[in-house]
Image 1 (cartoon, rainbow, N blue to C red):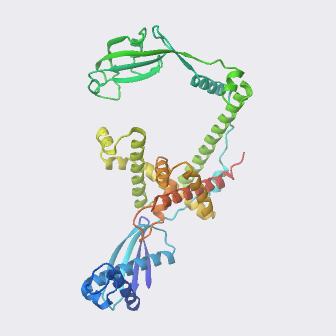
Image 2: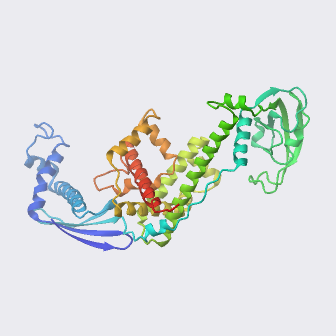
Image 3: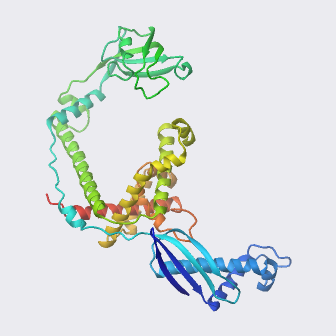
Length: 451
């Protein structure tokens, strides 16, 4: 087999193939056997008819077509592997010369991972200045206050409601969603509703009802209601007084393994410190990556952009279903946009994700940062402990922003594969390979940051 590779613009190449007549002939026997397994020939068991009879039954044209398909597929994969070509997606194949007992000639155009020219990323990491991470007393006090409120008791109240009470109401309006009655519960005075609504509730008692009219704000998000007077019918279902526990040593002990209030505060302080340390780490990583991107040059293949936009559409569908139980088509109708318009709006973010993926991958390649099968298995094992099956785990992962890791699935796709990423378990493997690799790359870059 003779191959010639020609570089094309936009991260594409074209491979020209010439399969000698003798080599092309070798594919005939395998092709005829494949075809013989698919057809019934009277007097013979399926797949057991002589090759000559199979060829006569099918016809020389169909046989030649199958032979060419087999030769193209195997020759393409062989060329990709031998030349270490990082092909993306399926190739565009064009047969240029075909005849029995003659050489086969064809060409394949395919996208490849682009050449990535990086700046001195070690020097960039060296210039990052980590910040001090103090935890102020007021932060601990705020956390204690939130904890206190979460342990509050609700005591039923028969008298009139006032600011700070916890109330449950039902309300409706003929001008909103056809007058459907709704229920809500909240702390009075926190401004949950449009201006003036909660003020109308002051003084109401359990079981009392009230009608009133309010003008919706002119800048209200629903244009059908903005600036219009709307009539409400409200019923006060219940009122509760909020009783907060006293903040002392006994209360701290009741929350868990704390000796006193001081040990609780220390634990909270350590927790805040950990959160802020993680935030600072992510900030540093983002800054390093942004500075590398600013000075890197690469030509992003369109196929990766299209693939990533498709992934983002799937992420949106999953989030709509999981968080709002909303069908994607209903969502499009509500916002009056098409899927293409949504996809086009994802272009900047998809370019960012793909660029991040390519840069992190290139650094890993240059620094010989690899991920072992054992590391991947360990991560998958941890994930599967939390879910009854692989498909459940995959759905949960789809809610996360993991495209920068998962693009490797497309990068590894070859001509023989029929879908992106393969089975659910294969998707998990690809995902965790990317997660672990990217974490190792960032740890490598962080090693250059001086305290």
